[in-house]
Image (cartoon, rainbow, N blue to C red; front, side):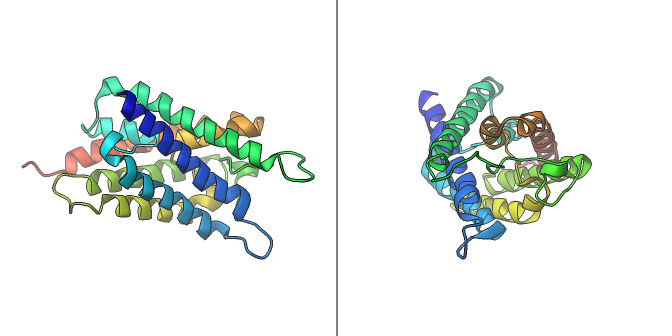
Length: 229
């Protein structure tokens, strides 16, 4: 279990460092910014690379919603849920702390700004409200878990799951960055919110509730759809 939790910590650390780091440092860099598409690709690449690196150790959840969705789908033990979530949230917070240390070292630093935190209403990149954000996060996480459960099914083509999951996360970000800055991951949202404070902490509840609801619904749905052997 210690090895699994270490893998989850490192994997979630990499997801936040790579995904949120690209949003903080590279998305709007003058003349060379990677924009929404680049950030979406960065998030997908973090999951793809970690799935190959630690998938055989911990399953590479990197996300409390994924852990709970896999449990709902009958693919994960209930007794391991809490330790996994603690490791994931810890990895996200440490990565966010590192990003804070780096961004605060820039000349003229006067605050972290949005810091790739998730939000709705006036804190949504596109000005989308609570209901739009809630619906988006539920549906995007639902589809993410359907992809994960299907791609890792024992009857799926072997060796390609990380590619499907990584590309799935890219597509999710391409759709939903303008709406909520894309969470689908309570750990990722928590790490950034801690360092933004204020509005990000107040709105953090949505980025726990919606992804978890979407993931559990997906676990139940896939369990129903999966043909019996």
